[in-house]
Length: 269
Image 1 (cartoon, rainbow, N blue to C red):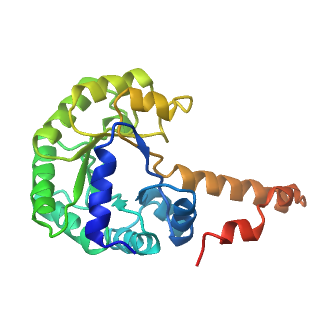
Image 2 (cartoon, one colour):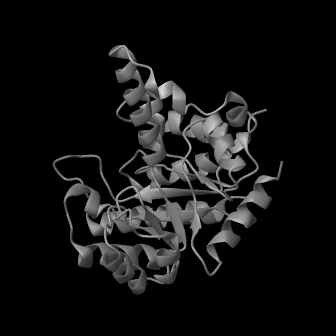
Image 3 (cartoon, rainbow, N blue to C red):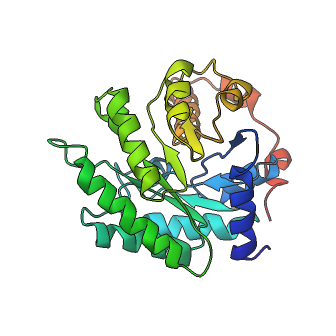
């Protein structure tokens, strides 16, 4: 098993390449092992996938950290942790989640400008920047290099303002974020516009983008990291519900499509 320092170096090197790399989002040990078996080079936790697994709408910080540890210890791969808004409004309090993430095995993690308040879902730019600055300071103080991703969440909350999203990402870049991320971008044109406006590695989440966009197109657009968010968890639950509905109706057609048990478990201990 590589050390956390070796994982951190490998993770940074992926971002310094000339082509986009895929970083899928497992939600437990089994899904992490399957993804490693498929040859992925890094993993990212998903707070949505974790919440789905627990039958909750939102996980707590401790649940996110515990899940991070399970996934980080399961494989040899670097792990980036989805910390949502770091579970705090105050910059100093939010930054504490960054240090905790590394204690639990992560070599990267994210901070959002989403407040969690439906009446005012996006932090004012000044506060959002303060939060990124505090997170950057904490990340730089850690014993192992930690890649901080700053997320502009406008598009997920009905604020389809590309200019404001770019303004926020540029401010986060200036504050020292290592990776930039604007979930909710849908078209290749939107992605190209945002990537062209920033200089740091950019993450696209394909859970919200036009599914016809290819990895080759994303690389050509300058994207460096491609995730799927809770997409794999959602497709797993969708398949579960489809099969369970058939069973409830007295049919078992889904059994014909089951993968052999040995094919699944060959990736397990």
